[in-house]
Length: 159
Length: 324
Figure 1: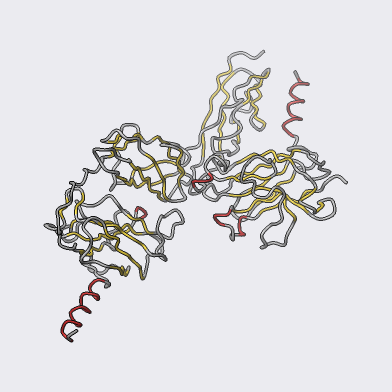
Figure 2 (figure 1 turned 90 degrees about the horizontal axis):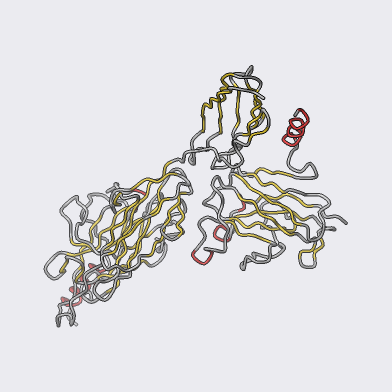
């Protein structure tokens, strides 16, 4: 029994994937977590989760080239993924415009989400093994100029 | 054209495009529009612009029979226009706002009653009458009676859990606690729903608050049928903070001499536990370890979030009768 408890204790004590997870806090109290940020392989699926986001503000989630703060993150892999099928970017919104109903993924209560993102080191012709890229969230197009919701966690791909 | 006739025409034009405020002594918003006279009885658009538009609220504009001084109309058209800087609003105060009027609407005959446009603050300031205004309008002489009598407007009765909703008294819902709005239309037609304001979301007839304070507005529309015309009713909604409860997923799972309790609340907040009987039980994260028989007293807590949900706090008592 002691062994079982010790095992459980070890499991509980282990932070989310000791491998290379990272969490960043945003200016509105929200937090963004990426399950793996180093030695990421081409086509690898990583889990991007958020908590305490403002549920009245829709966001886009994608991998983008790192840009200076206050600049619109672009280019991004997969674009806005308006079809919602590429798995490269996501639209999260609990109150999207009519045309976004069924396409945008609503927040969970508490402003949470968890997305599995399939990432590639290439954004168009740009190679994220040579330039800095990151998992970004930003306010969606209904607040396209609002940079206060931008939040990113850099990714380092396996070379 | 004689000078007298020209002055007479100018007076008509000035009347048609002037600002008029009657019901309230000093509304601060300046409502300018026209034409207000010689309107087509079968349907005419009145165009409006605004000065000193409220910064914190929007306005509703609708055709109504003139109310008694200081009161709000009791006979009014349901073709209400919501004007607001809220991006969800169908009309912006910066644009050309049109209100469609007719000489006849439910209970009203504007050839024998004083009709006009009633202006008031929107659902975000439901009981504030400071901006109430009534702007009289008149219609062109009826050259011929309408060929067909206007259809009676359909009726909408909305309720939540059996409690009837009111267009004038807001109902209250809690953050992330969905409610279903049941609607019965007089025509039997299937209603449609739309929610105005970022603070709420609507899926079908299910309304959910995304904030724990503020307001939103639910519009219910019946398309009517051959016997009744379309109608939209608005129901103001107030929001209050939600109640946190533990999510039982995985909780209660028994490990030898241990119990796993809920890790999170329904709003995603981590629950912390503290043992107040450490000789009987200890707690690590959400795992309670039983040490011996007796009463295990724990206190569970989760932080609240201002404007969304309240703090969770609960005392848990476990009776341990036998330990293996």
